[in-house]
Image (cartoon, rainbow, N blue to C red; front, side, top):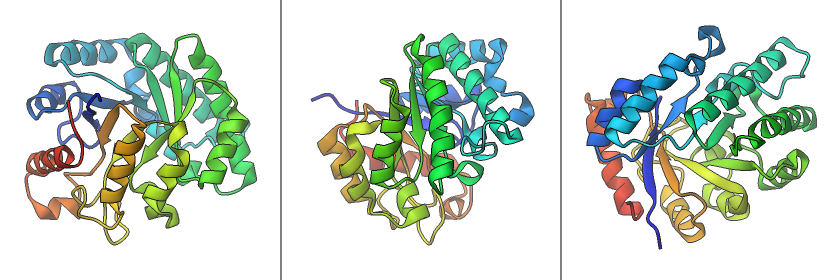
Length: 274
């Protein structure tokens, strides 16, 4: 059975940007999930010169890019009506994200639904599905998968998949968000939705703090979740998303690279890695 590939979110890497790819490789990571960037800064990764630099450094250090994240959606979410200001910005973000993935030959666009994009009722779910469906149609011709990261119940996840109704739509699972935001059992959620999952974030936390604990040392029942991940083989990629240079995690060690190194070791204890 093929081993998992271990990567990291660009925003969790203590040195983000193209110059951090070499360090990621030196530390034994296989890939980096890139960040499209914020609307207020013009979605930096949509710039061809910036794309070219990432591709150059990725090739140089043998770093893969499993996905692009549209984290601007937490500020201008898909749950807002299409005709609203945030809805219009969300559509622009989707278009720029798919275009960047196509230009860089990145196979997946990850779209979060939290904060200003949180799914809280039928209306916000319908608004979100409407935009996800549009993104899937844009991505289809490029062979790109659209993946929603959210904290929906398993029942609402099934409903989302049905309402989007596109073959290139999947779910991006996170090992803390369901417990942190809704109090759900992380392993139970994954058991119920794993058939929809395509990639996932690895993180842990304690006392209601996001990405604040080394893997398996928090309150999310990470150890059992890891067993479900191994059983279901729902993702080729395991992508670290702990915040190594932010408090309270940074209180554990003044060197965020040392914390990242410890998490890489822990990931290797939980999972067979290639």
